[in-house]
Image (cartoon, rainbow, N blue to C red; front, side):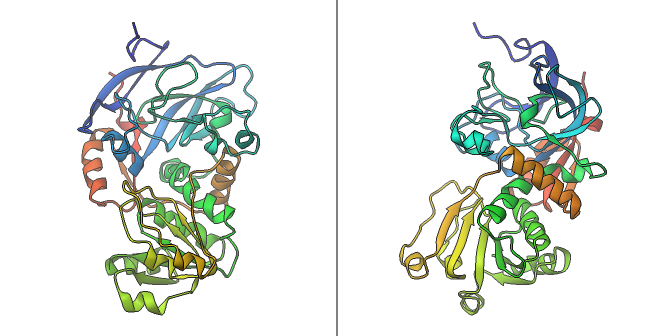
Length: 360
């Protein structure tokens, strides 16, 4: 007979979980494994709220295992390290992102691309190597293999910076991999939400000229004046879109809702690259001729490997790249999820775990 979540491991933990597709969260007692020889145990201080958490809470991708404790933008302070841990010590500030395991042996893993390993283990709602279900950062305590932990840069804010562990690496990685990080390039960012606003900040830090593409003119001031975008396009304005035909070297498409991509492809120069990082529930329609006529590329990109994630967080600290966040207590999470579903946040909720999660 399977043990209850509270009894399967020796370390008592508490978090907030949803137990069914209603997506309603409530306090939840469970347990973490003891700190193994390669493990880092840390007290969770803050955890970002990703749109993926909302999809998973309601099982919109068909992957959810309940009870679900989400959270993969987790930062905290090390309280214990295993006997063979080399990179961390007690008191270090650390982070855990979207994955906590992989096979460590395949071509992807040996080339620092653990995120594309076929046996990659997600930080929550996945089966860990010991056969138990993983629980995320809406909780007071984490235990993770040191390989999947990043060292937080000194004097870099933990609370504001937490979303970089998903939103940051998800946008940094395609800019780097697809060569869209060269000064003077013209880069488009579709959507100005949790991912999009961070994409703008990274693209600007690389020295590119950034165009924000949105369905709403209401975001123009925010994009250009606050985030520093060089120009703004309303995707529903045919004249604006036509005038911008063939002007972009690359596009990072962050939109997770169903949307037409033909108008976006038309914005690319010949050999231009459009990279999808959002995950719409329904398939997008992909026309062939606009790709053939300009040798254009439509690609996808996930997060990044652990080496690149550490590189990203160090780059962000060096250039003071921080998401725009709203700090909330854990008992606000149901309201936050409702607001997230309505895009009513600029641009990322971050839960203050240390101050608001009661251990009783």
